[in-house]
Amino acid sequence: MASLTVERLREDLEPFQRELMEEFYQNYAGLKDDIATVRIYEKYAHLFSEDAVALTRASAEAGRGTEDGRWLRYLREFATFGYVDSAVKQLSDGANTFETQSVIDCDGEKIPYRYIATKIRNEPSHEKRKKLFEGKLLETQKLNAILLERMGTAHDIAPVLGFKNYRDMCSSLKGIDYIAFEDQIEEMLRRTEMLYLDSMDDLLQKRAETSLSEAWSYDIPYAFRGEEFDGIFAKDKLVDAFFKTLDGMGLEPRRSKNIKIDMEERPKKSPRAFCAPVSVPQDVRLVIMPSGGWRDYDAFFHEGGHAWHFGHTKKEHPAEFRYLGDNSVTESFAFLFNYLPSNRHWLSKVLGMSDADEYIRFTLVNKLMFLRRYAAKLIYEMKLHNARVSSEFGEIYRSCLQKALKFRHTELHYLEDVDDAFYCAGYLRAWILEGQTRGALEEEFGEDWFQEEKAGKYLKELWSYGQKYTADELVKTIGYADLDIEPMLGEIERGLRE
Ligand SMILES: [Zn+2]
Image 1 (cartoon, rainbow, N blue to C red):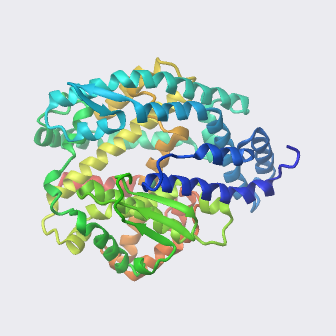
Image 2: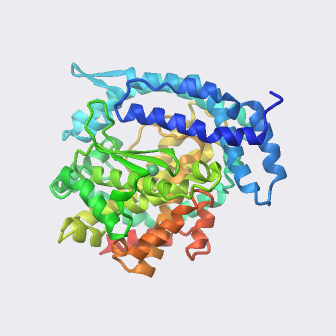
Image 3: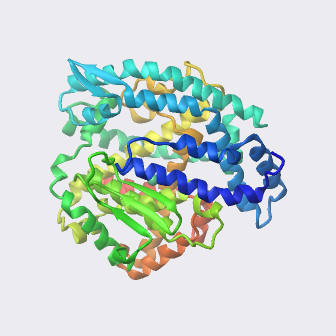
């Protein structure tokens, strides 16, 4: 493929993203039964070819430190991870097919593999949850054979591409020092240890009739069901609450022609809200089928955050800044909206909740648990991706998760619980950036910032960059020296010590 040039790659990046997103949208919105991504990947195979990897590497290295170096680095990351994805494509499809087709037999009841989590979350009996969980693990063992081969293949590619190992590949391509980041995260774990022990144990005693040391991972989603809050988070008020929030910031959701909200009920529509940035910023779709409850509000606001970010990205930016870059940035804007339905002022002004103490405590314990969970995942993956995967990592996974979370885990989730390319670190960085962005908004516009048009203008400016800047750079533009866990932890500590 002598004709492959950086220009060709850049030209095809956007049509590829557009076709892929359209396909995902059609399937998850329930408009189409199958997902035909293979055809799209084949059509654009040159974007992830060996030549593309070598070409973008040479160009990114030559362009380092120049104006073009920024998009060249994002393009290189895209081509290289795309190359790894293509190498494991069949195994990924195999794992996916297994998950969609596998059925668990529990006391004669046949439960689809992907439905088991929902089933466990809603099951009041600890014994029944245990049974469902153990039934699932029998299938997980089979799935693990595929996932082990898949991760082994990905691990083996890294040295072939000239990196020390998978961890070094992620670190180099993304420009993130994971070792320094892990130090920050360990500090977070130490600082919140006692607070977590007390508040989580208390919550489990009240909501799942178990103690933290006795609890199993399958008791946790049940403990956080929070069905007594369902009345407040009503299904038919969700979209109104979202629009009211955006109107407060002058963001005119009804006039945003480029962001379409798909609320239509379809039998095969995904029950989880999602955002499909089909063409950034001209065609962004926010899809929901409201069912009510706090999870629904959090999920819809989260996806809404992505939609408003992509929908306000400057169209003049090269495709690399509109589709690629540091995903912690878009995740931080998603979290910013995600946490509005657990903000005291928002709850009172938008939903008319007068005494929110109990609910806010509930959400903060949940958030702290998630932060510690992702911290544990990062610590585990730092070891996993610095070596070559083997079944011995099951025990390492179990001990890392258990050390941070204190409730019991199975070693069998050591592959299923891993997202590619350190996405766990991406979320942690997004949580930190969100804490700082919200801190800046509160300082500039007060605690009711979500009702200030000026806050909307401020956000529009940040959104306009797309993902041109990394989280570390963006945080400097809002007045901080670096990514800092302080605002995020301060909120949790104040809230849970009261
Ligand atoms: Zn997200």
